[in-house]
Length: 115
Image (cartoon, rainbow, N blue to C red; front, side):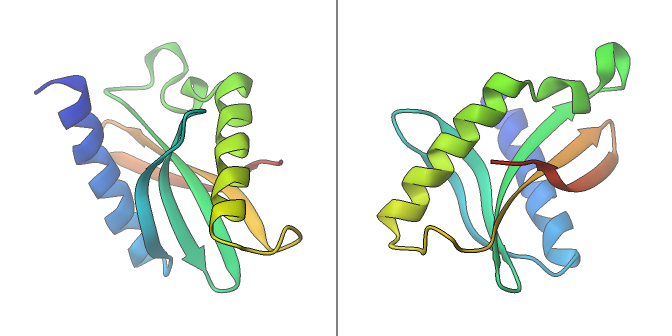
């Protein structure tokens, strides 16, 4: 499998995992010129922007170490576009989560970073 196919497989696993936790997936692979958000979901009254990271193991910091500040800033910018394009309130309830997959272990980190 190539990297895109692997990414798609683990994004699907992440969707299933967060749906089991009660989130409802709204959209996947939301793209703008600025970048991409892997998953956009709803958790009660909140819109959640999720980044999915997969690593075979925890070497070199594992999946958690794979979301640098620059990537976080990009996701925030893409989220702002999503909010504007969908006429959502600027002061609504939004959060940025990460779904980290190390081997077969999946961890969902709520509020992984702030806008």
